[in-house]
Length: 167
Image (cartoon, rainbow, N blue to C red; front, side, top):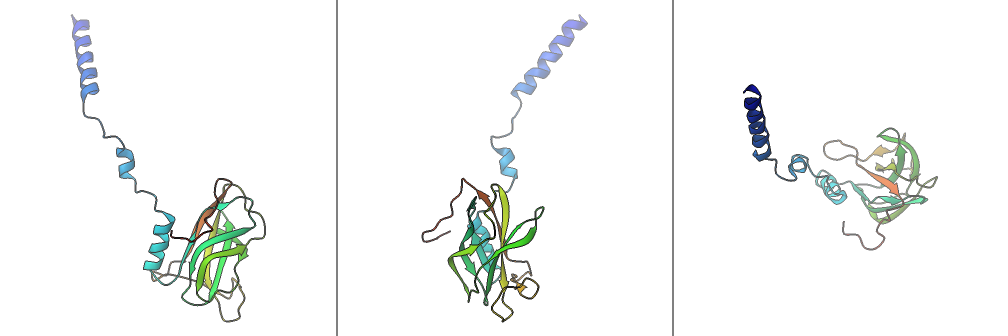
């Protein structure tokens, strides 16, 4: 009799669990914020100041970076850094002096980009001598004093846009 009672209780528990409310499909992704697009990041930079940069992911093996847009509030440079554990490491490339930025800027780098490696493009303001020096030139910042930069990935699957850019 006790076994019969135990089997009935077990079947009820299974039935309740099977027919109970389930989480709606995609509920896990609804609780996570969607990843912002690069253009949204660029627009946020412009909304917080007069300095912004837009860089798409780049082609691995390339010896230059194609910068979609750079906006500078005063003359300066686009500077490319390699990755050092999730933060910018050492300088591997820099643009010529830019009066106010530009579109489709080509920035040469010292070595070909490595597959699946993260890199950083950062803006600097020139100190007046017309050449980039990390210890002398000031990093461009927004109205909240945050450094203006964009990270990007090098991969053989990517090819940055070279036509007119409307990010």
